[in-house]
Amino acid sequence: MKQKEEHKLTLLMLLAMLFWGGGWTALKILTYNLPMEVIVFWRWFFMALSFLPILYVFKVPLRLHFDNLKYILASSVLNIAFMVSSFYGIKYGYAGAGSVIITTFSPIMTFLLVAILFRKNLTTRQYFGLLLGLIGGYILLQLNNLELFFDSANIYFLLCATIWAGVTLLSQHSQKHIHPIHYSFSIAVVATVVSFFYAKENPHFLDVFSQGLEFWVAMIYLAVFGQTIATTIFFVASGKLGSQKTSSFMFLVPLFALFIAWAILDEPLQLHVIIGGAVSMLAVYFINKDKK
Image 1 (cartoon, rainbow, N blue to C red):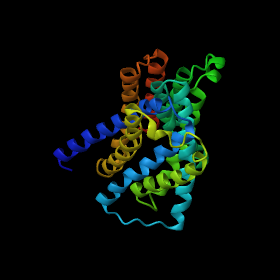
Image 2 (cartoon, helix red, strand yellow):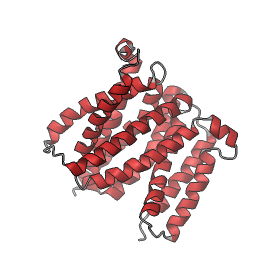
Image 3 (tube, one colour):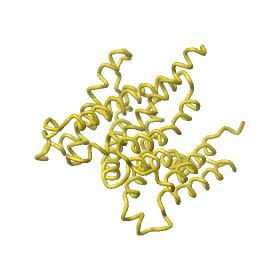
Image 4 (cartoon, rainbow, N blue to C red):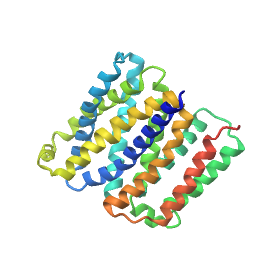
């Protein structure tokens, strides 16, 4: 790959991580005025719409086989569950803290699921990474005070990380059968339809159209920039830079999320979140590091 192209892809990946990091602040803003089911539906609806020009640009034939449907349906259910859990977690907790817990715990939970389900033998380095993950989790979730843990939003964030581990495994297997962009688009469509039947009975269903500029900026940012554009950049870049290199950019998401939440929402930079997040990111590094 030419150095100029690699430099361009690197800048695009930084932009994608920034978009993902800002999504947590956008979600926090959306929790202020409307119920969860209404926000969940409209988020999926606008995300599905925003994928249409992406599909046109890439011009990849949309082929859906029966084998694809089981992945799409299962991922749609898990994605809705993730959105519901993250909504309540962010509503009652800090956007910055939630982003750190979810983005650092998800790869650790994914690795544990793979190790358990497929009986994978672990290396000494990976055992050390898991130990660091436990330490980071203890600090992040403030498990030294169980009463505080159960009274806080941390339990929602932990649930999000667990759900996303399942989403990750499904998406990895789905890529053998369906293009990643088609996969994300199909999930958005199915999630839109499913969440519609739950949201349409809410008396505030159409109240989105009476919201102010701040709400709409947050909604468009979360659905379009924080999901469609960022996800597309990630998939395109990973195909050219390699999955190992692109996955390393994920460490920037919690850093961007903390900074944006501090700058826009005036959230405090909590010491236990910074320390626990750093330890957890180090754990992910050791778990995924090649032997060489």
